[in-house]
Amino acid sequence: MYLCELDSTVVEVNNQAIETLGLAKANIVGTKLSCFSKRYAVSEFEELFLSISDTEVSTFEDMQNNTETGTFPIEARGIQISLNNQKYILILARDITVRKEAEQQIFELAFFDTLTGLANRRLFIDRLASSLELHHANASSGAVLYMDLDRFKTINDSLGHGIGDKLLCAIALRLTEILPTEATCARFGGDEFVVLLPEAGESDSICAETAAHIAKKIIEHMGTPFHIDGHLLYCTISVGIAVFPASDYSAKDILRHADTALYRVKALGRNDFQFYDPEMKSSAQERLQIEKGLHQALDKQEFELWFQPQFSAEGSILGAEVLLRWHHPERGVIFPDEFIQVAEESGQIVEIGQWVLEQSLKQLAKWKLQGLPEGFHRLAINISPLQFMQVDFVERLLALLQTTQLPGHMIELEITENMLLNNFDIASSKMSLLKQRGISFAIDDFGTGYSSLRYLRYLPLDILKIDRSFVTALSPSSEEAAIVEVIIATADRLDLVVIAEGVETAEERDTLLALGCHCFQGYLYSKPVPASQLYELLAKELHAI
Image 1 (cartoon, rainbow, N blue to C red):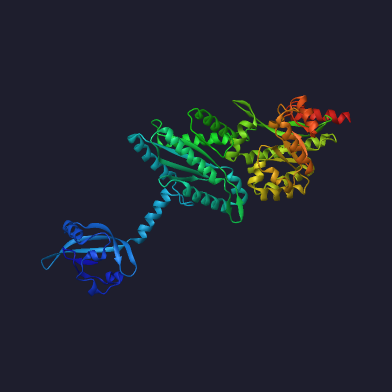
Image 2: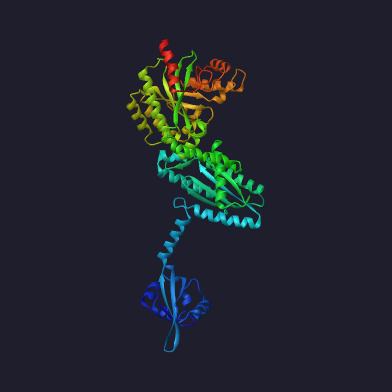
């Protein structure tokens, strides 16, 4: 407590003031109150004191100067009193450090992401809304970059949330290092990051150039691997861009546009950027309908397994690949190309993939009881990276083998090149465990990725499938023939079986035979068929023997 004259001279203090200030009473009394203030000068205190009445308490905040520990925030309450016919100001001051810290914490929780320290959705939308008002007034342009990490969920599920969180923090740090100072970078949760470029150009075209330059820079820097707790992690990024103000859109409209552009990037192969185009809206709505429908497809038994047989050069069936068909109640039959990517991005692929595994093994067990020709070796099942990286994937598959009483050598798992690149150590370990039970592995769509040649020799692989893009219109004189020849030669050196996909003409088959490929899959031999029709083909071979 301070008792001050109207000119702010201190005439009396209590023991708590002496203790808090760390000064002798004689060094406090007689000085101006401004000596212990970081906000008010002498003249400002005199003006303030003149405004304080004797009937109503006045409250103000200040930074109290403590000679021992520096400064701390206080809340002061003052009232005018009369003693011996003289007017004084009586001030009660209290330390509000705890309150200020709590207010700051509440502010940070309300406006900042607790993991990365970046702005959160609430703060970002507020700043975007402010930018929109400003841009409408001065006719300049800005941009929003909506970003999503490619296959982050695979890393998170396989290595654990601790590693995933550290990766997110490392990504946030890398983003803030390369973005301009005026940009706002936010995390919207999960692996979604959003950037606001408030002043990106005087026109839409200049703004678009700036946004594209920054998007390329982000993609380039994210291509450098992250070192997290002894793991070398590759994490590419996809970016959707919306330039504003293109029309009378709200902040949420702009975000939705950038998000729509982001999904176009994913549909085109990821690790790139796209600008929003109004025509994307219809495709985004269609994607949303597919995602909603997938939630019900399993419960309503709308999925069905089909099978495409694989043939030897002599024309006998060596095996079959499992293919999924979705009998949509309104759209009819939907093929995997239209819904698998949506299932992967939404995480529903794990549940769908488990259903495919269970039904495939049950069907194979049924055929085995009915009788299979000796030439039929295995059933090939596509496994998504997200499904394969589930912690309990190996245990689930081995349990299915035991339940169906199937030998492991009758199962072939088809995996992608990109899965090997992003999770080589974990993938290799899981493959080795399953290999011990006789399960074989094939790299699907070989030649479309960029990592397999480096890793082929170190993985327990059995089969290499040449992608249909190299097989279509294949002839001895075509450029693809040279590529296919190299692929087959590489497989031979590593003792891998080669299967060519998408074989549709006799010329394609004959060219493949001449190049050394002796296993085929495609319309020349058979289209995908339901389980009953495939067994009819198998039964013919069985009875022919």
